[in-house]
Amino acid sequence: MGMSFGLLHLPHFLSHRESPNSPLTKINNMNVLVIPDLHAPCMHPKAIAFLKHIEKKYNCNKVVAVGDLVDHSAISFHEKDPSMPSASEEFALAMKQVKQVHKAFPKVEFLIGNHDALPARKARVIGLPDECIYNFKDLWQLDGWKVHPRYAKIYVDGVQYRHGDSGKGGLMAAHRNAQAEFCSVVQGHLHSQAGVVYHANEQSIVFGM
Image (cartoon, rainbow, N blue to C red; front, side, top):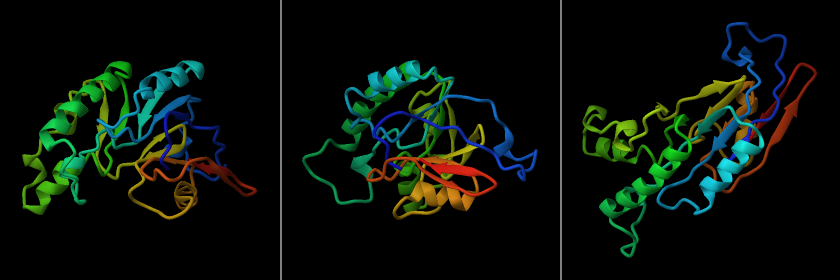
């Protein structure tokens, strides 16, 4: 969805038709701090301070980061700007910011985004398997974080969290994904979109954020 900084998931009301074994039925009344795409080393200098303010203000008891913690501009598939830092320089700069994020938020559910996955994606182009790629959690020294693979979906209080580079795209993508999944959806990835859109019928109400 492309949120600038942290947001909380909003109340979600379950349909009585949902299975008791569904991940959607596990309601724990959590306040979730959502950390969207930070793209280190391009993180806003006030991002962490803002996120900590939101965490305290709303008494958040869980943190979910929806991907693209790092940018990897120097190894992207796009045309390179020769004035930008090299891959090695960018990694060193990104590591400094990632360490700041990790210190501020030592326990996070993290969903790998398309930028986070660039080393593995580039490796596949030349035929290297994932086994040859350094584990993301170890590479970025994210002890205490639970790192989920690319395209993963996790559920907290019946709300689905995903990076957003799979499923429905286009305008109001989070809302369209919520309709397709029959549950509320929080996603990142799409930086030009922001907000929360609800969809309701006589049985239930869901939102896309």
